[in-house]
Image (cartoon, rainbow, N blue to C red; front, side, top):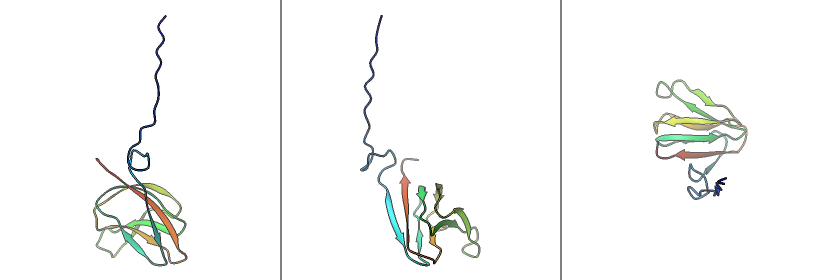
Length: 100
């Protein structure tokens, strides 16, 4: 009878042991806007932040990720932003996914 033993080991990818690399935090104050650079992003919003995009150069804003929610989005570097809703200071956590 043969017995196979597999030893598991956590792989340390990026600086925080995540396959997606290190996480960045942005703290936004009332009415603050953070534009995300080009790439794929994993985002977890704070209580007062939403992720929005504009389909028409700023006339209309559409919410992609609501406050206190998370998701995966693509940014073209111009039209995707994290927006504070003007009712309080809060943080959003985001990670740019590399190699996609």
